[in-house]
Every structure is written in structure tokens, then in C-alpha cells.
Length: 369
Image (cartoon, rainbow, N blue to C red; front, side):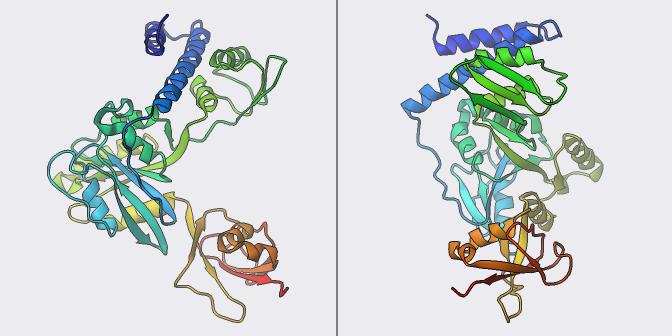
């Protein structure tokens, strides 16, 4: 009887040898589902056995950012410029052998930034302690892909992150699968499907191991999106690119690299970490892509505190603010008053459901009893 590893290898070889076309798409889709099921089983068994010692990082601040790049791309230098950390810097690979955290204070927010050991090809399979590094990256709210202008190897980083279950600048597919006790697999789509048909969705879900389930598709999906949903352990994270060492080459060299990276759908900031070039721009980009905003609180009868903003997620409601402050505030809440972009007029009275905007001033009025 074949081992899981042998079964995985056999399925991978069959997929690689099968030419993809309309006639073979159904067969390949089922093979991908089988491969996903086998890899999930392999992962569960490996987790049960336990692994080596990982990196322990306590999260702090309003959000966490991971600096991800090849060895010696300048992560430690950048961390030292944008935070209060002191990460060792040296002109050879793998200077950082553990995770070095720092706090970046910007626009009133305290953002934890993690300097990680460099990722190398094969990291997702454990090379260079890659699995431990990637486990830390999965906890981040934003990933900064740091590129050396002499080695702008985006594909290597994206591939290793993808293999670790990280989906950069993507949204989870609008799929709902509800297991049932009987009745087989029922597939229903609310949109026209161009890549998969309902029969293939049915067979892929069954091949993955579900026997009875209702499947509802609310967008046109690919087989990879369906498998990501089935596995359920994917993380969808925003990512930006920082192209480093641009001071060492002419603009005619680094500018096309920036355009090429931007064409891949990544916001790109060109920097020279060693000289501190564009450090404020990278700070701004980190804050903006974390979807953070500032809300200023105004006690009754007093001026608003414009020095110490409350840092919350973009799109937060008055109810979210109350939950952030103290549970008793929600219990005693009467109404709130708002000044700023989200208000129809200064001092507008609003309820829990009101959505705040960047820079709003908020006053919460509570019951006395």
C-alpha cells in the first residue's frame, strides 16, 4: 500500500503529464481535489507528531507587519529606520537568525514590525527554517515584500508564501458549503460559471471527501479558489512591495523594475534603507494599507483630544468604538455626536450603526444610571 508521500507524488506527476485543455479540465480538477485532500492529511499527521521549536512572537500594538524578503535584502536596516528596534546588520546572508520585533509609531498608531530571517526557495518545504518563518508571517496583518534592486525576485517570495497558504491581495471566493447528513452533494450557482461547471464542482467536492453537502456559488470561480475554500486554512493578506537599494543604480534601471512590479498588482515604494531614502513614504504606505484610521474622542463639555487618537479599522461603527473602549459604555449608551467627514452636519446625533471616517471627532453620550 502506497504511503501518503508516494500517493502525493503520483498525483502530482499525473497532473504535470496531463496537457490542460477543455477535454481534460474535468480530470485535472478532480486530481487537484484529490491532491489537496492528501496534502491536508499529510499536514494533520505531521502536526500530530509535533515539530521543531518555532519562533515565539507576542503581538502588540494596533497591527502587525511582517518584513519578508530574500537574505541580505535590507530588512534589518529598514526595521532599524522605521522602528525603535536594533536588528543586527551585516553584509552577509542570514544575519537575522530569529524574529526581531520593533514598534513603529506613526499617525498616532503603534504598529509592530517583524524582521524575519530571509526566505529562500524551498522555505515552504522546511528549507532554512522556512516553515517556522512562514508560520510567523501568517499572523501578520500586512506583508512588506522587500526587494533588492539587484535581485527583484518577486516570484520566489510569492510562490513560497502561496505554498504556505497565504493569498496576497486576494479576496476569499464567495462560496458557501454546508455539510448535511444525507442527500448527496447539491450544487447551485447564482452567477454564470465560465471556468467550472456545476458537475465539476460536484465531483471536486466529493473527491475532496465531502459526501453530503449543499454548495452555493455566488461568483464565477476557478478550481484553485474552490480548493482554497475546501481546505479552509488559507489567509488572505494585503501585501506591498518596497524596492530597496535604488541609490546604487541609475533611475533608468530601477524605474522599469517598479513598473513591472506594479503591473503585478502590488503597490510599490522605492527606497534606500541604508541612506533613509523614502522612509516616510514606506511608513505612510504601511499605515494606509493596514486600513487603519484615527478617531478623536470628545468628552462632554470639553475639547476633543487631538493629540491621542483612537486607532481603529477603516469602516468601524460607533458600536465598534464602544466595544473597543469598555463594555459598560455600550450598556449605558444613549447616542453619539459626530464632527467630521462622516457627519451630515457638525455635531450630528447618531446611533450604534453609524460608520465613522478618518479624522472624525466622536462624543459618546451615556445614561447616568
